[in-house]
Length: 640
Image (cartoon, rainbow, N blue to C red):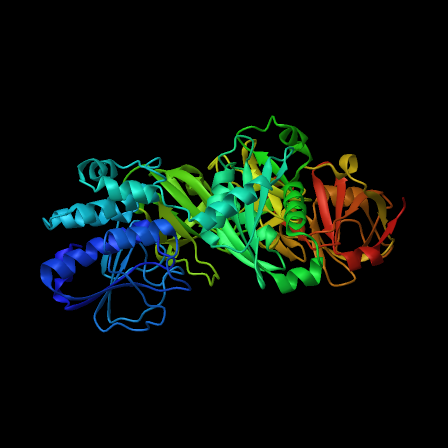
């Protein structure tokens, strides 16, 4: 999109995001100058939200550069074209203004559906750079005032140029001719005298925990931006890994969180701090929240907020164990007894899949947003993205996918509360995976798994810098020694079943010895090979095998050799002929299983499946049976 494409409209409104910063003001000002000065449009430049701009550097920027932005908190509609600068229409930080035509000019990652008139460049350090490029494309002259605004927008949005990484940002910085006098004043006007008094006083009264390396700073009622400034300042201290700055008003406790360690996401810590008493959100390194003083008083009485934050932070730190797949030699990794994990089998299920080669032309850094959290991976043409029944997404190599799954042309469209998306880091766009997903059918993979007793943060081998968060009763899954991942409890119940195949229950479990009661059962001998439908699954049998029927009308096959060794004909039955037989009093190992389970029979005879509290019988190594709980109670006698 070019700026000249927007000249079709005579009435143009340029909207900044709420609580404007220097970048949105600079970008909006550049657009305003283009439309108003050169083309004499009916133009409006405004922002909405809960409050006017009060930060001294921003009010100074507006005044010194004569930026004609207006505060319009009650604006509901605009009759012409609405252009959002440094933000996206419909986002949470933009006041909703209805308009028949909308254009978006932004340098952030795509958040939702974008209008046809859109220029999105997330690789740039600022929207000011983006507007500068659009103005250059139109050969628009940039005077000192506009140059200073654009320069200052980039300066602020890249942490004093410390975070500049794109050469176009450098180009703008080097080519603009700014008013150094105004720029110097803006750089040195971030705080008012009253702000300075607040900052200096609260920093002296900080609460520091040397063991966990966090700082808590209480402030009087103030602008929330000042809390962010204070917490940012605390993060400059070499012994501080994360910080919380807060202020108490009549109805709310506002706070800001900053973190510099990968083991603590600011957003996760914020969610923990506001649990049951408030709300909040944010990102990996920066977040904030609000606590209701009414809810706070009801639960904590007159407890000092500093003590409250200290207690909740320590509870948070003590509630999670950390597992790093890149370094399982750590103490926690050493405590993970992989051999103690139980075996589970993935059930046959319809899943979704997307081949990365169909979406991306080259090796690409992707962010998967799934049920268990966000994971960053490097994907190439051999990567297949699997989509589970709850929207969980995980990568798989194409060769392994081809071995374990049958594909269809049917679209995969489950009813999900959160349809999964994938972010292309290079392009900055999010792709809704379900629009490209097809159905595949697979299952049968055996994994090792254990139920989590504590909260767990797992750094996978796919994304060593971003953890998955697991809660107690979720499951840790192992596909190989260093390939671990987390599955929520409800998803695990639907996808996995306990697998006893190959296990000797007599050696490793607190099993019982049981003898079948002397209850005669009718038996017929198969006159040809076949498959019998039992309560526990389909079982193949051979010609001559015995087909038995129990008291509950349940049926099961027994090989002719094993039947001859373990069953005795009743007096009125000729051995080897159809009739009634009773089982000899041979003790059998029996284990009652407290979860759904299965066992695979030898010689490809099939698979047996039991429900929770059913009994697994082991007649001899690798020779199993499953008996429903109610049938076991009536037909077996436990002897020890």
